[in-house]
Image (tube, rainbow, N blue to C red; front, side, top):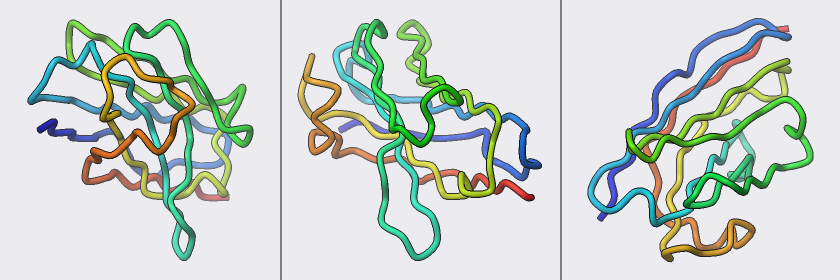
Length: 125
């Protein structure tokens, strides 16, 4: 069973940047795709970005493309989300997620079934 712990959230002004981290433990990190999702108040959780087990392939929601960058360090068992040009509509709890299948398809969002506790990101206007 994988354990995921996010950090790096906080309060930032519109146009600012934040970097989220997610430390994973409990299984072979480098064999699984990882992802970031978010949930705003009163809304369902939505996809933000995913990254392949190797780190070579990424997939982004249209709403964050060009502003957010997902990356991973398999030696450190950590996945990151660099968020630039933040907007008030990016305000949400951000969750790190791990895929259930080894070497799966990063566009198979249903495969992401293990979740961290979330970290709050608030963007003020």
